[in-house]
Length: 87
Image (tube, rainbow, N blue to C red; front, side):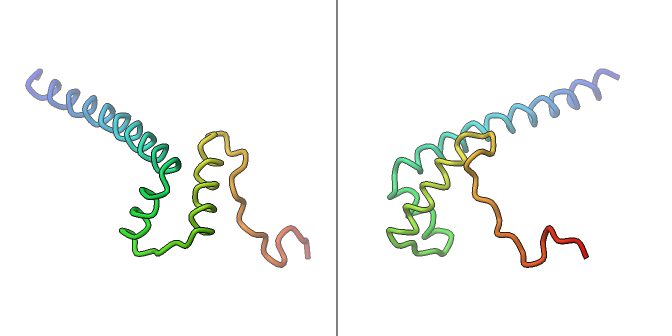
């Protein structure tokens, strides 16, 4: 019985630990990118985008505003033409 339970528990703990370590690493990488425009430019080129200086500044501002984590300062999607009206 323990031959089955121990590996399953180990797998679950490993997955949870790996998720948190990965999230921490990704957050640190994003912090580095917002301070280093060259890294942001490199990531954009890897994704197939070629950003000009204005687009780079906008991307850095978006990353800084999302850094807060509470949603304040995040860009909202534009409203559609008839959104909010009752018919």
